[in-house]
Image (cartoon, rainbow, N blue to C red; front, side):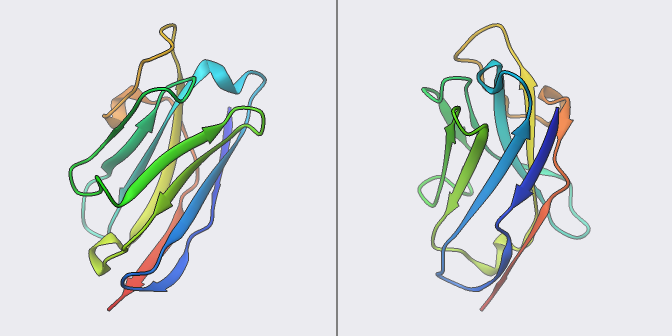
Length: 126
């Protein structure tokens, strides 16, 4: 499984960005997906996760109400819509994937994932 994240960039506080993560995999719907970020000097932080079908999602408290995760299984792509961005959202953003038997399973920990993308940088200035 290969994951390619894109959509990062430099924005102003209050702006929006949409990140995409394209997966090179035979059956994308077999995988639950997650988004994480890592700021300089900090540990990798969970942001959002979505189940295989997209019916179940979960978010970190820090982004609830501002970020939305979604997926298009026909396009093998997961998205992270980020609104009302703040300078503290500045980080490298990673997508991650793992397979699951249960269709509604979601993962909130880095250890829940086997496959990781290369990351895309988001910089938010005040």
